[in-house]
Length: 93
Image (tube, rainbow, N blue to C red; front, side):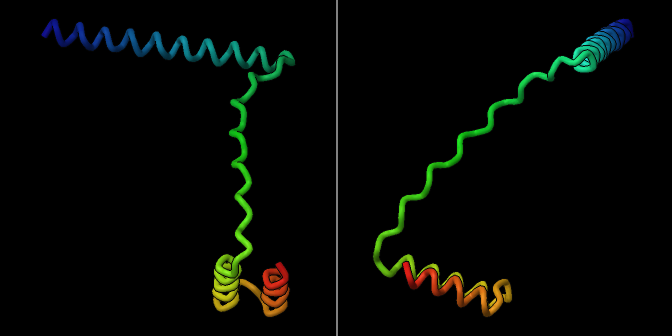
């Protein structure tokens, strides 16, 4: 039984210490930010992905694009006017 009580007491001390430290840090940061200091900078945003390589001049990519466009039109995502405008762009490229 004394071992159990010792373990419980140790856990309580560790948890209490962690809570105290956490609260102290939060209060200190609140005072800093309230005093006009800016918050620490956020991690830099990841670099954007490099642009995709241009499609080959062949008809395979245009055919795929037209098929996808047709599916969107069939599903009702694109109106007739939008479909025709995009189709003309694909065929003109």
